[in-house]
Every structure is written in C-alpha cells, then in structure tokens.
Length: 424
Ligand code: PMP
Image 1 (tube, rainbow, N blue to C red):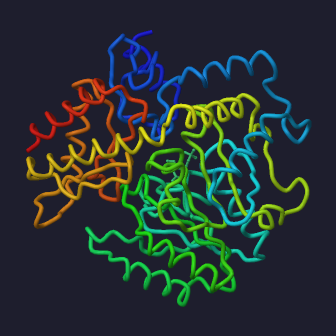
Image 2: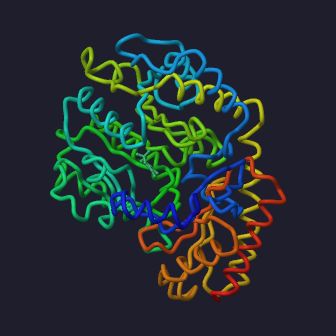
C-alpha cells in the first residue's frame, strides 16, 4: 500500500492521540537508512528515539532473533523460566555501574522499568514519595506521567495525577538554572513538600532525553548521591535514553563515577526488540515478596536473545570507541554551525548524545521552537529524519545509529546545514 492509502487507514482506525507528524510509512530499513511505503529513501538521525544505536536490523541481532524463533517464543518466565532471561540478568549485572553486586528485573518498556523501580524502592525503604526533575521524561503510564517534568502533551487530558511525586529543578545554566540553584531547589523540596522520612527515591536522567539533552554535572550527581545517603533515599538513574553507548560509555552515569542504587534501561538494549531492565543493589532488589514482580511478556525469550546479541555486538565491534569518535565529529560540526548561523547556540554533547538550540539571538537566548520545527520539516523534505526536543521544543537532537556509515553521516549533516542556512 502507498503512504497515502496507509495514512487514510490510520486516520480511520488509529486513535487520534497516537499522532505522528510523519505521513511516510516505514517499509524497509538498514543501518541508518529507511525506505518508505512509496520507496523513498530517508536517512535516519532519530534511530526510533534512541533505540537503534546499533542501527536498523543489526545482522547479529537479526540472526539471534531468527535462531530464537526456531526454538522458543514464550512460556512466561513465572510459568517456566528459560536461559535467555538469566543470561541477560547476568550480563546487565556485570556492566551496570550500580552499588554492590546488582540483581535484575526485566520488563517490556522504559515506563514499565520506572514503575517497577519505584515499586522496588518502596518495598526496600518502606517509604513512598519520589522526587523527579523539571524537564525529565519517564513514560506514559500513570506514575511515570506524573513524574514527567513537562505537562503538555503528556498529562493534558489525563488528570488527576497520582500524588507522592515531587519535582526539583534540573541544572541548566544556559537557561538560568545554575547547579547551586538546582541543589537548593532539591533541598527545599525536601523541606517544604517531600519529607525525607517519607521519600523513597530520587530519580534522575544523567543527561535529559526528551527534556533537551542537557547533562547534569558530575558534582551535581555526586551531591544527589550524598543527599540520598544522608536521608536513606535511593538514587535511581533513568538511562532509558542515555544508556547503551549513547554518551560514549555504556551508561551515562559512568562519566561521573557515581554509583546509583538502581538503574533503568531499555531502548538500545536490544536493537528494537521490546525489552527493558531495572538493575539494583541486591538487598533492594530482593526486598519485595514472591510473585510481587513480573508480567506476562517481561523478558520475552526473543527480546532476551536480541539483547544478548546486541550486548555482544557492543563488545565485538568497539561500539563505544565509535560512539566517542561520532560524538567528536558532531561536536566539531556543531561548533562550525554556531559560528556560521545566528540562531544556533548552546551546542553540546556527551559523546554522540548531541544537540544544539535554535534561539532568537545568542545574546537573548530566547528559545525559537518555531525555527527548530522548520529545520526538522525542511530536513524531512530533503530526505532526513530528525528530532527536536526540550521544554521549549527548540533543541535539535541527534540520535543516529552509532554504526552509521561515514558517507551517510556526511550526507545527513549536509541536509541539516542546508536547512539551517534556509531558516537563518
Ligand atoms: N525514560 C526515558 C529517559 C525516556 O527517554 C523514555 C522514552 N523516551 C522513557 C523513560 C519511557 O520509555 P518507553 O517509551 O519505552 O516507555
């Protein structure tokens, strides 16, 4: 079917809230390229929102999934466990930088990982509150919706939100929130709203994903670690978007040397197969009773096979080294654009988790979401899938596969450069 026919079907049969600005339907994809239903080729700088750090259909992942399909697709691990689940748990325990030894629970999505992290934190501490950050994003279930630090579009139409969720400022010096102010804000929340004796956890993205690709400084993350220790709260890092090589390390928190109590991950964990995980200190992970954690599809054998193959590919193909080199290339190019284009400012990257902002002028720093939207639209017309993000929608973020071929990277960057020229 053509894009047009598929769009007509979508409008007739799919709930309007499941929106996409894209009327192209994906048909076939390979590494950093996607072809739509009409056969048009697009370069992919979105990677399914950070899911495809290994590129579309990484050959080793595809091979592992095919082999698993011929063996076992499902039992439900509570009915009858299988090797893939425990192997993924073993591997994650080895690579995730959590405090102590590290045990694992698998789930299906990022939101489900956060939900379970909070369940476990409540069981482990006997406390209920959670503190999150302005601009944070954690999912679309009720609890994670409440945790999101941006109201529209996530919470609009769905209120009231669950209580026990409190918010502190995320440090974004470019927009006037210094690290000191953010810390003061967190300490104030603990005084004014969320009594530490009732607060189970602080949940933070080391680099904000949907919230704009702003990185918390290492000292800020260390301060959170100290505050959590002081008050017996768990530090949970949400690495759903920043994990699996996106920042040049397996997990973004590793840059700071801080060890959280728990880490949530998903997205690029299995190159597109749905799976997520919570990794945490043994004693916390063991706090809740038998049958208190689970779900029919959690840690499906097929997703586990994909995750194991993906994690092996990270090791075999020096994906982290490639991520660092990709990040350096992006940083160099962004610096040129910042010089060249009056509206491009606050270029930033942690490895290839890279972004810049469109602002009215470098002196006013007034966010121009309209210009970011125009750049995304122009890129789409040129054949590039690109995403904006941030509280003001004025950051352009780059989530291309780490495995992108040099020529295709260059072709895509040229399109962005042209689009920036056209909106300047
Ligand atoms: N946490 C973060 C940091 C995310 O970026 C996302 C998804 N963008 C989620 C949680 C939710 O993940 P999912 O969409 O798989 O539920």
